[in-house]
Image: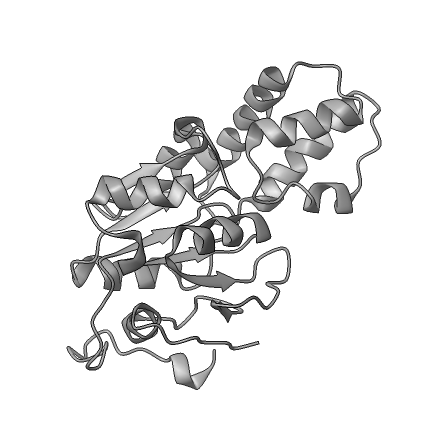
Length: 239
């Protein structure tokens, strides 16, 4: 962990003199939880069952995408099912894995605890469907998430800004007063386009440098001071 990110949750001045954001909006797969391997395993199982060639690079191309878009790619690759059927099949497989274990990313639960204690509302903003997002939220302490915006609840998914704009609207705050945390290129595009202060955290794909984007390799140690710095418009780049 970078010493500059060390946090002392007992210190009431941990956020320094900077104000915290009105809300923190968090992607789910790859950001909150390490479920991308679950999705990739499900895709591999499905394509293998139908003798469809599917590489790790193919799987990486679906990271952060809307499920119906991913299903269309799998159908085009040769899976002989309707896109909606593919979505249902993948969700069922991932839900089975989540019922066994919610694989939180390093530093996530500590950060969520700090934000909750500080009275900062948090939202899940995901292209996964609500049933999966609720399973993840249920694995966190009660009242951690004020709202969930899921992939089956928006007209235009990521990379469109609609999911983040919807989350801010539901929370009754301006999206420009929010910090968004993402891991995928598609999600980062969505968050930046919404106007939220955006932090990219590496998961299964590198976070490329972009104007206005802060970057960390992990949320481990990223406490309230980091969130306040982001809310103030500071760009943080630990790459």
